[in-house]
Image 1 (spheres, rainbow, N blue to C red):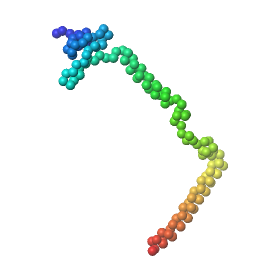
Image 2: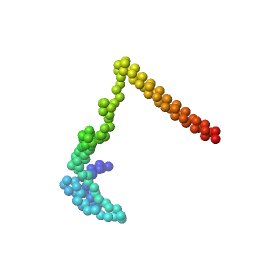
Image 3: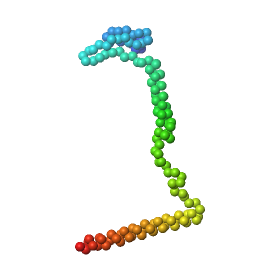
Image 4: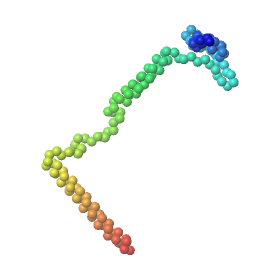
Length: 135
C-alpha cells in the first residue's frame, strides 16, 4: 500500500482532473472555470496568511472599538436631562429623635386628613345611592 502524498504536492494532478490550469509557485490556482451541466467547478485555494492576520485583527479590534465607542462620553450620549432629582428636591431622612417624632406626627395628620376626605366623599355618595335604589 502506497502512502498518499499531501494535497500540496498533488496540486498539478488535481488541477488536471478538474479541467486544466496551472499552480503558481505561491500555491494559488490560475485555473479557468468551466461549466458542466449547470455546475461551476473551480479549484479554490485558501486566502493565505495575510487573510488570517486580517481576520484575527478584526476579531480583536471589533469588540475593542465597540467598547470604546459606547464607553466614552457616557455623560452626554446616554443622558436624560433632569432624570435624577436635585439634593434639595429629595426626601430628607430624619435622624434626631425630635425630627422623627415630628415626621411621624406629620404623616399621622396627613393620613387622618385623607381618611376624613374619603369618609366625606362616601357620605355624599351614599345618599345618592339610597335615592337610586329607593326609586
